[in-house]
Length: 188
Image (cartoon, rainbow, N blue to C red; front, side, top):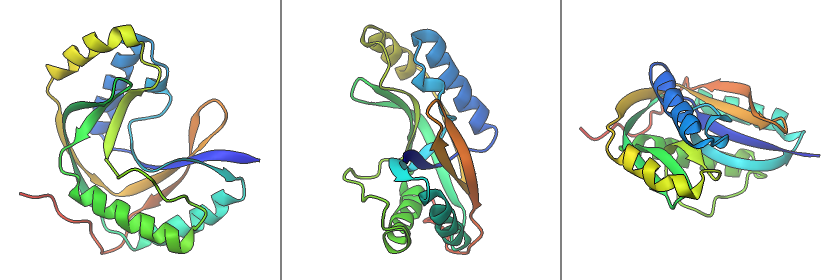
């Protein structure tokens, strides 16, 4: 049997609560269930189907990876869209999280070869709603978020592995970044 897994960064407080409130607002305004099925996060490895045996191997490999990685700073600023289907909070300084992602992909190629290589370039973002937004409500939602400011910054100290239960995404393991190889600093 194959199960869906994904690896993500969850923002710490207060960014977690602020962005969770935004996701709940989109859910209330549009009925989007996808908005509230997963906590606020930045995806590092997108959802992928793997056999159940993957989780143990993945946990060992990601524990070793995290031990080599230092914290990375993420800056959020404003909102943007992928097409008409996905509203997200922009990562305004993607260098540090992009460097962490690049090292993660290289690590997976060497230690978890079953993790597929991504075909799209890494565009870090924090999704507020995706896929099930009612098309008729998108123009009003675009207008609402275009006029709204939001900026925050946080330090990434942990990665979280999620497994889909068939109903919802459940956190399965957390990996603290304890190493000295820090991601590129934010441009000042």
